[in-house]
Length: 177
Image (cartoon, rainbow, N blue to C red):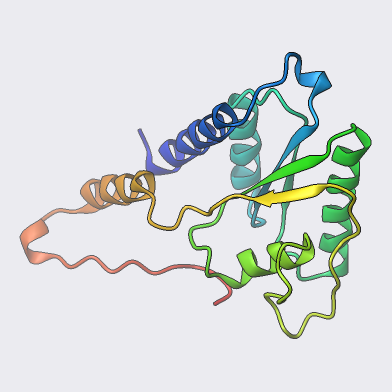
């Protein structure tokens, strides 16, 4: 399986694991729990893939997907709209699933700040305030040192390697930091 597809499958699997660890209501429509999946913006392949993984997770809770880093007024309003939509469905707790590699990134910090989970903004030069909300936000862990990520990287390295004993792997991360 291609690394990108494997990572999307792992994302759907991870979402399924998260949901299975929550207390399930008798019927999903009676739930006071919702899930907000947050991912950085990307091309159409990226956004379609994330949406497909969320759909494949078959979440029994109301859910929304937010794309962006939260560094503009427009993105803040989109996040506000996603939370308001979930609150409008009668939920009291929103579990936020950040699709990020590191919990130490500016983006993770910015998302926690905008959701009122953290008091320090991720981007110091962006004059935004936390969104208005009436629910409890539970911010889940990022991938950090996930074994799934390690397996995806190893698969990709094996795919492109021609002479492992003579090669060095350097991992470069794309992003704002």
